Amino acid sequence: DSGVTQTPKHLITATGQRVTLRCSPRSGDLSVYWYQQSLDQGLQFLIQYYNGEERAKGNILERFSAQQFPDLHSELNLSSLELGDSALYFCASAKDSSTDTQYFGPGTRLTVL
Amino acid sequence: GENVEQHPSTLSVQEGDSAVIKCTYSDSASNYFPWYKQELGKRPQLIIDIRSNVGEKKDQRIAVTLNKTAKHFSLHITETQPEDSAVYFCAASGYSTLTFGKGTMLLVSP
Image (cartoon, rainbow over all chains, first blue to last red; front, side, top):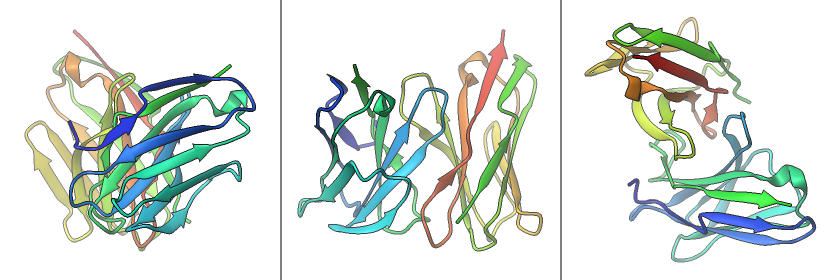
């Protein structure tokens, strides 16, 4: 157990819908990272938050957004869902900088039908 | 930005053999290189990492080497066991975020 929690574990929804994925970082970690992992694909970095502020953006679609709250938990919002958005979504947390170890949560498996 | 290439994409070995996975990176400013193991449907888990101030690090059957001049680093697993079967990801990070390689599926046959 990494200490990072994610909910829900599984999510099944229809095209065009909107969903919210939630992540709670390890105690003491200020950074939260979101990744997308599609079938047979590696880990695609989406976005990073540090202590409530957006710090870095990767290949995140405009239909996707995220935020980090004062208690440091983070939410990833996916809207106007398409079939191709079906994937495993991981969050990871780290103490501070990009060279601190990232600990991954168990992931949320999103299926868009 | 950083670009990480990882080879091979699949690697099959017999139990007890050694396995080597290689990665190259593009950004000379990168100074942190972790390796993650991911079993099917599970989270990636850190197995070893190395920082640019050392050339090699070992933890039991696992070792990582780093050549900053050539910008490549490698994972070495000795005496492989069936439970080592998984996908392994290398990554590199400097002042920006962690960039992952595409992964190597390691299959260890009994």
